[in-house]
Length: 118
Image 1: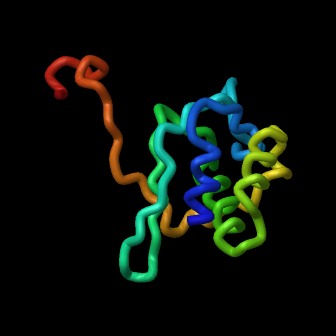
Image 2: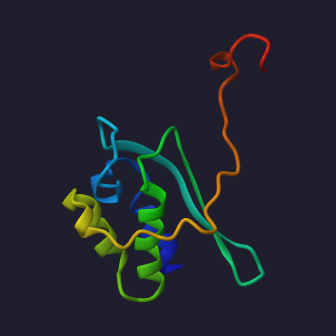
Image 3: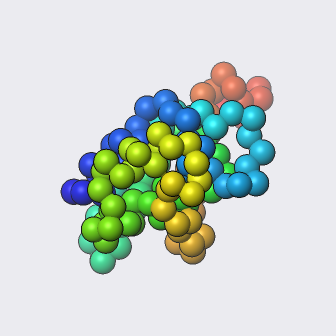
């Protein structure tokens, strides 16, 4: 519940500088997080579902690492908001390891696909 409450602070359009990698080459750190929720897999694992038009380099790993701090009781939802507003990578939590992170789906509107691909 605490992790979900903190995740909800990241929904919407924000400057995600605090959650991007130092080597991120994106010109703008502004992204719109449409979905950020946890699902209990029932086997001792939870999944973090994130949906957006695009992500910054390491954005989801850095968000995950930060939300894990909330789950451990080391951070609060207010701390997550403060990290977001700081616009500094050092203000957010650690980068979560890549293990266990995988892309499950990519959705494109049919009008953005080359003809014959839909």
